[in-house]
Image (cartoon, rainbow, N blue to C red; front, side, top):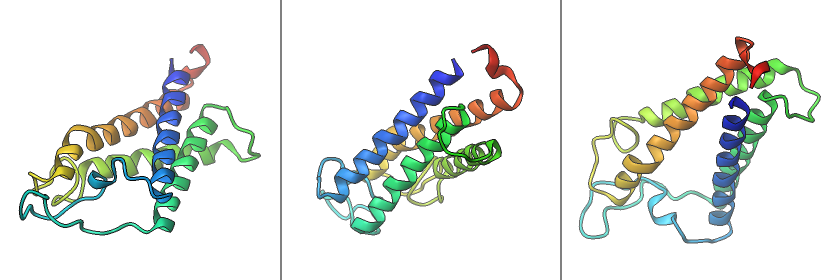
Length: 154
């Protein structure tokens, strides 16, 4: 069961990485709600707070692919000659990063955002933040179960 959760989490990372590659290549689907916007000034919903560069978007894609490899490595499905502690700590770091993203920065992003009513805020409330919470929890479960030796029976 834990192996299935880990593979599913890695698949989510790969899917998100492919979406970022699509955006870096000029794709438009979903791009309009992927970046936080300021306070709505009209029907458009406010200006984007930043405009990601192609290189930055590809860097995020590479990080997500690396995250998938860390999860697979934690499950013991690794080809890299790295010690196991790299994957253990990598999963904990990823869990904390995604938990921090879910909590947010208290203004535009996360559970405690104050700016609402924008397209991004709606998507953040119903998809982005819950997804980040699910990823954080799944990484913590994967690591906890493996650390406590319960993985041999799944």
